[in-house]
Image (cartoon, rainbow, N blue to C red; front, side, top):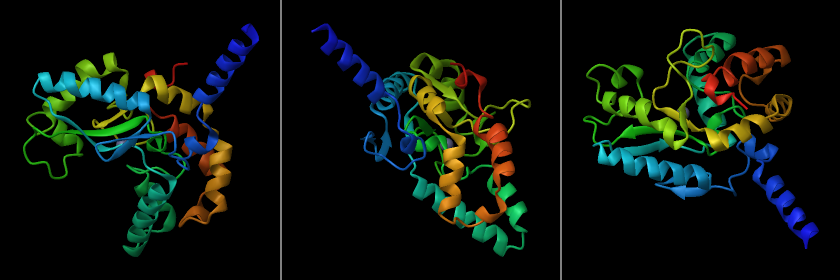
Length: 233
Ligand SMILES: [Zn+2]
């Protein structure tokens, strides 16, 4: 009996760990649907609790984006790469410009189902609200930003790309939050070398200009260039 229970617990522990392909956005079978988006079940439950609390304070919290597959990130990457190089940017400059806001496919936290981009449906003028300036002063999403800064942590959500001059990597994104209790497992399981090997294996636009040295610098500056609270074990 004891051995059976021990075996079940071990199995549960193993099953609770994300797989390598789940960290790369190559598997969504573990996710649930919410408002047309996909999230891990625990992230979805925590988001719903936070959404209910926000509504009581007049903030209509809505998902703009959650899980994004490798394939979708590849489309975003290649679309920008083709546009920027068509405008005359040399390939390496085009890559630097993409990296202001978009990740290399296989390295997005959106691959995990633990990270969300949000907006406030009560904010006026909903078009293109994912702009930092619109979340400050009298901007339409300023009340949302303030509410999230004061309340998100108690629901397990943490801002990823903080407005912190000492942070490297992606620009400040006041709309992107991560559900730490789950995201920490993906962060731990993430293997940069595997991600690089997979990325190089499929011949994505611009990948010829990304070698292992570039990748390692990118990993240090961008992939772990996040809110330090998310890197705690
Ligand atoms: Zn995001």
